Image (cartoon, rainbow, N blue to C red; front, top):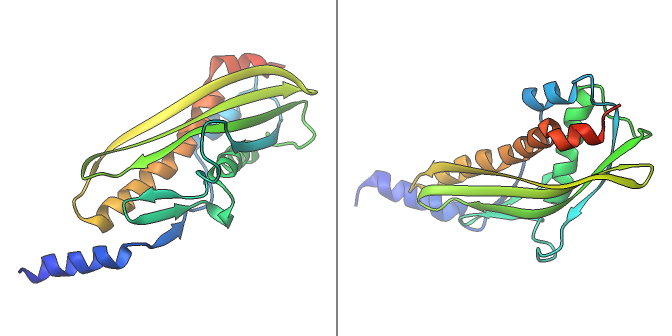
Length: 187
């Protein structure tokens, strides 16, 4: 057998059962630009939790073949979604724990499938905007991604992690650009 194939098989076996922690949320220029819009006031972050219908703990790790991706600080991917929103608002100068409007969400879909050939991932949440406890908007938003997935485990896992983590920024971008959201927080 070719030495290269043996090396790749060994690397794939070494990765079996391994886990890593996702990088903390980073700036999304598109989300920061959307949050910076004059019609968006300062916002507070409420509870981001696992939604109904998902098994308890299903947002504590995502399987990427034989590899497990964990959320930062080993919290939950629901909390990671809230942290991603908070980071974009902070960078736009719009994060205020005492703001009139609070955004919360239930994570209702959380998947990554880096199968050989065509891989997929999806993320969905039901977002709520409240003003002094009164619901101003409740809406489910979803994003998905498709990417080429290598036969080689290490390559596929790296691509899957990158594509899956990017879904969090994409979902926040979708929220901040959503016309219903913008109407709900209009000054």
